[in-house]
Image 1 (spheres, rainbow, N blue to C red):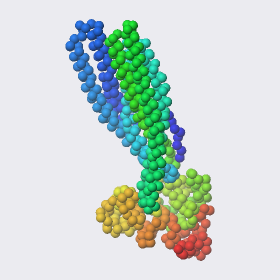
Image 2 (image 1 turned 45 degrees about the vertical axis):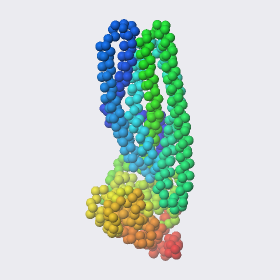
Image 3 (image 1 turned 120 degrees about the horizontal axis):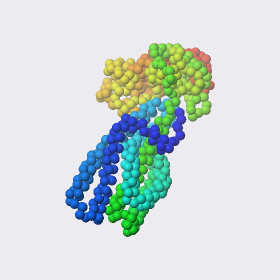
Image 4 (image 1 turned 90 degrees about the vertical axis):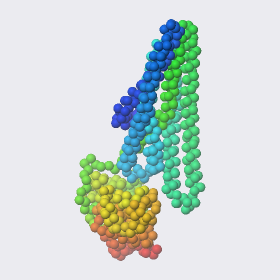
Length: 586
């Protein structure tokens, strides 16, 4: 899982261009409309030049008919401009929003593919910032970037050609100031880009801090930690303020420099143009038209300058978008992967070694284990022995560092991820229920399940009675993360979800350790029903829950230290016996 190196603006733009492909005809029409609006702006100085020229050279040729015709022409052009501008402002913006929507879809889809190892280090609040606010800026960028540069290009080229027909020396003098202006503005531009990027990173950190605090609000209040959380938030908030200050200083320098060069170009035209007129090198009509064209030119440059802030925000959003898109999923389907079919549930670990990416020490080393279909395996032992890790390797939540895991004699790497995980059910200690109804949460185990199937699964999980006692039964809203249900109720809903999935392999990861005695008893009964006839891996600290397992494995840092039934291990007087005595005396 590696990020590619940061790329420059041109490289990012090349990667961004394919998003326009679906909307190329909308873009073509948008740019055509942009050309029409530009034409309208360029015609006005020529009309004024024509009227002024006739008024100063041959007054008799300036008739009311001519003026009205020129006025009618400009009115028609203005109507065309209004229609074109409406298209640009509506359909053009919608195109930008569609591109943003496409990018957000791709972004979310990519996040779904990333492995557990990525989320072990990622901050959800930061990812939320990237998928929302970062992409908002891309909408304006996607619409205005080609439009603004296209309009500016037409205006600058056309203005240069038309101005050269009036006075080549004056035009060269005016345009000579543009390279100097670009050099100065580029320096401020780089500072703005860096500042916008830094502010995006910090707002992501702020979002992450807020999310962390609000999700843990019960812990915060139980420890009277409001002041601590406010202090942490204020530190991040102040850092964001200092970053924004730097951005606005760069922005102020950028805009102030633009105003200075605006004034410089105006005074050059006014003073030198007037001297050329005195010397007879330019006519009064050309002088007036020249001033109007320079105004159009400067307006165009000013629009590009003003767009630069939006451009930098958009480029920052695109850059941060591709930072995540360039993270390659650690676990993917092999090229020739096939679907797992008619899975019996035989699981075998062959010389499996594993260590987490951020650690050098192995969690599991050359582990060998063979589990027959329908066998119940219990994993016990001290924390850090690798119990949860071992179970996480079976559905390929993490990839083995060495060795292989077989399902019905076939390496799990040769199976498609979806079919492998469809055949494995997981009931964890930390139950996650999605915001929605109980029905929706249970149906997550089988998307096309009927009401009868959902009810049957709930009955098997011992959840039907409490669900029916709720105000809206199966349509009861569970709240975010299932906050409106008790721990035991949430666990039984999660068990019903797995019953509905009906997998041949089952992983129970300390599924009752967080429950009170009464809830534990109810949930344990549901788990025993669920485990019947399935290959089951049970991780437990409460040893009473694993007494009936076909085989108990004591897992330590050195691997499988002991293996046997409850009675065999108690009589052996080893690690399990000591743990059981300790638990019995509690």
